[in-house]
View (cartoon, rainbow, N blue to C red):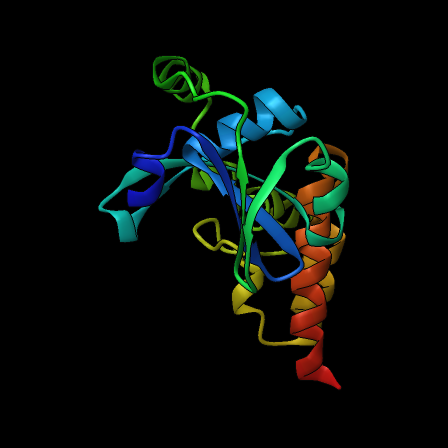
Length: 172
């Protein structure tokens, strides 16, 4: 977050598993200069409740998406691309403020799953299903059945499948 507060001339992509993500000004530059990805704005407790914008795409697609940009540095954890011109910070802040905040009630593994599951199974009204806390294969199967595929982005679907693969290792 601190690095992005002063970044106005680069796109920094951070590797997160099978994806790369750009945050804040880098995310704005990706959306406006590279491709119109769907940004996500979330509030992070570890940042004192600060809101942060990000975009991401599969790591294997980085070269294809970033082909028009000049690569400055690459390591295991990140890639840095030089921008042809500086980011208009005022335009960035206007863009960021216009984005909806992704809240728990919109959480694809919590609220969407829970609202579908309540209609299909006898859950306590205060209970929410979170994929991260699955304890049995039955709950894992229920999460798959209840995942709102029609209203999820391709990125959310890929992340869901990636998390399912990790969780399925428990049942081998």
